Length: 351
Ligand SMILES: [Zn+2]
Image (cartoon, rainbow, N blue to C red):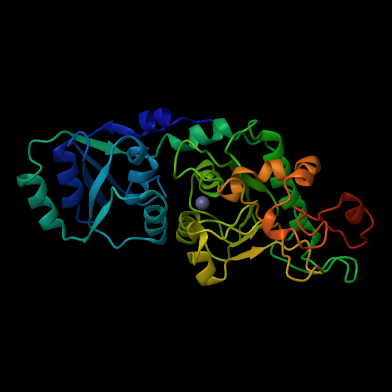
């Protein structure tokens, strides 16, 4: 998987004070963000580029600067996006402070006076798509041509969940997770980005080496463009604040995220998707009262995603029944009630 070093190498270009000043002087109001590293005292800056869908603050965090160089105060000349805010929540930590929206004039003065004799580095994300595609290759194949925006019930009475096709994509995401996760690894989330005809546009696993490379954000990076209208994302875990920010900022409208397991931690509380109604727990077990989707396991105090893939093993589940669900009926802690035989018998399966 892509390492922090590779991300950093692809991200830091040769920049200059003059280049940054010219960006700020641009009449078309280029969005610019920069900070002085607390480690090496150099200036790292980013700006809008024609081919990049990501806003400057996202680029600064994405490029490994948080992992390698402490971010102090970020100065910016634009109103922050959902993606910026979500990324800061997830990656900002204690080494970040937002200077708010400053005028281009005051930012130029800052550079000309306080930061005059510093080194300048341009941060870009232009190489990230190739890095993600290397990790998560996509094989060209025709899409299934299903209307993925539908949510018709499959067979009332048999299982009263959503249109069967959503279960298939979610099962695919879990299957990928099971197959690709390294033994003992922490890549425990998988996500598929799917267009409105059912074609998989990109996929990814969480990369534990970098705080911004979650499964959903990495699949968006692997796609590398603004997201089309009516896309769907199937993620094995509820999207966090950062991924929800990216999705809502980059969406062409009509998006929806299906997730296979709730995340009850702060990271995924009250996200932009929650506010806009843009995500749903894909419920395989509605007929079991109080149990929806896949129940998280907290093993050794760690978050659920560490053990998700292990949870897929029946053997594992038998000896690691989580304490908090001990009194519930056997089987309610199932991961995913998708059953191939149920689909095969379903006369209304259409894709
Ligand atoms: Zn995330």
